[in-house]
Length: 386
Figure 1 (spheres, one colour):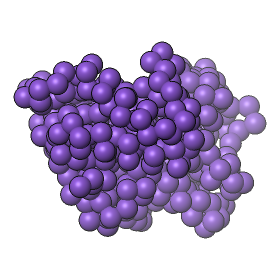
Figure 2 (cartoon, helix red, strand yellow):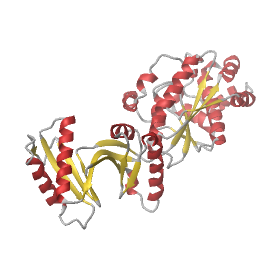
Figure 3 (cartoon, rainbow, N blue to C red):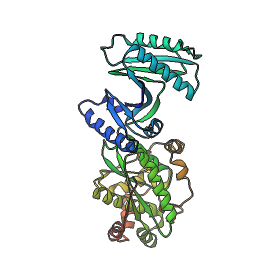
Figure 4 (tube, helix red, strand yellow):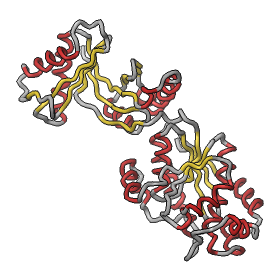
């Protein structure tokens, strides 16, 4: 009897040694969470996971947004006898032909179960011969085949007619929890997802300037958080109205420092939120030189307000690379919807691009930022994304 399933192959987890079981547990937890409504069963076997669910196509679709795996493959499981392997290989080939016609193929075999009496090269030769005998209009091409059909001989054997390259990276949650400053733009959602790739579970903090920014602007950001959270098992969004501090800055400080003072305030508030929820670092979508506040001097006068690490995954990317990633991750179309964010409402025509910390502190001393920020923090709103 041939049984259909889906397999995933480990990414970097396979390189781990003594702490490999920890990363495997994190991956297992994430897989169970993302597939829970499909009633999946899992078989973990030597750096592969075999998944049996109610809907293999939907399983494959969701797995393409899971970090910590290198390849996804539809599989046909059978008994580990040569005749049964032939049968499964022919079935898998016909299945693939029905989905996407091809002309040439190659068999790659792996004998994980060393008690199986036939070695891998001979398995490949015999399976290839069995497929050719079916007269499916196919020929063998070992150098540049249209399809590679893989035979994996274990306690049971598995035949895969193709595989999909997955996202790689580390399982989300395996390297800690962070808080990402999420705007409604292109960069910060991409930065958030790249942080997940390195095993970080990401929650989100958003700043708005209601009534100067609309409710629809916030809803756009919430929808972006939902898109980001498709790549992790769960997430929270914390919303802060930054208008009181923006108003104080605009009335009392040199307008050229507006953006920098706002960034310092946002970073302080994000630090309070992170510590209040056991997050150990902040993530931003900053990109060196992209805007006036994202110069080295600009960043150097913002960073001192926090004792948390600020991760900037996009720091060396150019804009076209970031847009390509946004399209790949599925956030681009939502990001370019024309709704304002708090950073564009109160902005100087000629912002300070080469500030010193002394200059910034002098401007900041003109407002009672501690009291204002405490009031903002107490009025925050929280939303469970997933």
